[in-house]
Length: 261
Image (cartoon, rainbow, N blue to C red; front, side):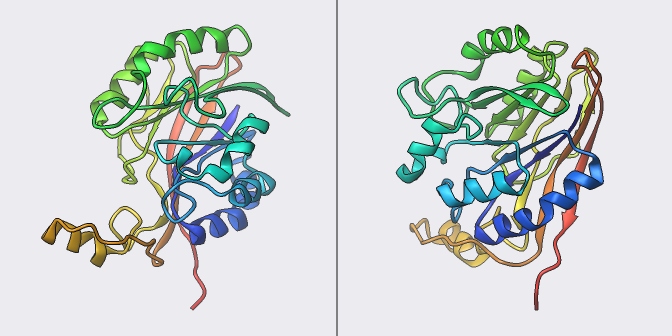
């Protein structure tokens, strides 16, 4: 299985750039599966139904989410009707949608588990309290199992990868918008990367206009944030796995997007 995992898509410009690029990215890596974290697509807070549909139409097989997925109520009907649009499973048992998916792609059956971290973040349950049961459910259906852990703390993401090593194909982190230099295959055959990075404007402070972010730190006053618009990049990882679901390779992706002048 050849998988592309795309890091947090931040803002409308990034969505449009990724929609344009996805067919070429699939061809370049020969991707059988494309998973996109889209929880920052709508100006950094959630995903609009139109954005979700555009990304799926462009070639994304699954959209994962995070702590902002439930920010926009207009997405709730799509979360309930389209299982390919995920929200972290441990946000709340009463929230719309689900964070667990078994899905057929032309190359075979895959499972995606979407979790949110419990360190420095709000969640109903620790990801460690729910993940073993989810992995057992997935293993009954397929050997190709991918985990998106949307978390603040690097230690929590690394610990989850270590906990699941040998039982899932990959554990990749999202949320911090800063790509980490630790992509590797663990001893048990699980690919791991602490954070995929951000698909969005990198001339910014994790996606937002730098001047607004700096002012908030200088004054402690709540200033309005808006997405930046320069140095668009597509970040994520390519993962190659064998028929048994063991990862053979993981490679970080960091691509510049040409922008109109």
